[in-house]
Amino acid sequence: MTNDQPHGNDLEHPGFEYLRFDRDGDVLRVTIDRPDDPLNAVNGTLHDELTRLFPLLQRERTARAVLLTGAGRAFSAGGDFRWFPELQEPGALEDLRLDARQMIWDLLDVPLPIVCAINGHAVGLGASIALLCDVILMAESASIADPHVRVGLVAGDGGTIAWPLAVGPARAKQYLLTGDPVPAAEAERIGLVNRVVADKKLDAEALAFARKLAALPPLAVRHTKAAVNNWMKQTAMASFELAAASEISTFRSDDHAEALASLREKRPPRFTGR
Image: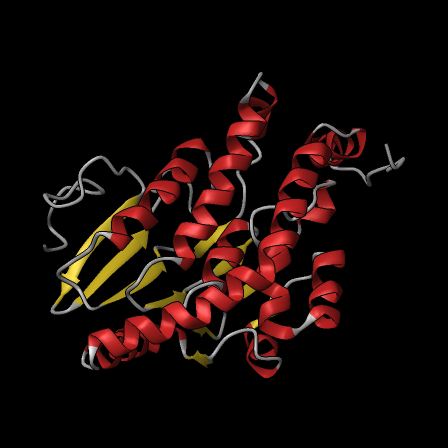
């Protein structure tokens, strides 16, 4: 595959609008690229495509490693607020909960090693996906955050497992309860990501590491990853189920509605705990 093929609809992986697939030897590069949104925010279409991505990667038989990154200014800057009204339609939130749960489990079940190159802001679901990859490189100008709480929501799409697994419960709660962004240098210092590199070198460094993994004995790599991820899944299962159910509940809360209203009206929110 080459970059001159039609955007998001190559010969091997048709039917994707916002995910682009390219091969570099034994490395399959997947790029989140939403041209209609410079921050690659997650709307219904992108959420569906991410849900379908990881089962596809489980069936990959040519590549020996995956490089996951974003195009433009962001890796993925979280949920698209323009999508949120659609989630109030009957059955939509339950469908979202089931898809979010399956997406995270499917990500952890991808046999191939996944190198994530965080090229720009990684927020909410974008942060969860990045942090649950196997090796995470981050551009020095990028930041990572899970601000669900700031819009009255529980981080039910993986944040409550990805962050504690990376940095422990106390540090995770510091950032999950405030929604504060973590700059790249701090993310590396606390062990949230593996390495920070200069923006212009990110793609080359991430590709080099993916090639390194691809050159190793594939069975040993895959089964070692599977053993570690099995521990992660068993550790996180109960917490994830609670968080996913709680997120659906808070989507219906007055505080979530107030958070969205305050953003539209450009005023401080007035939360009531209802």
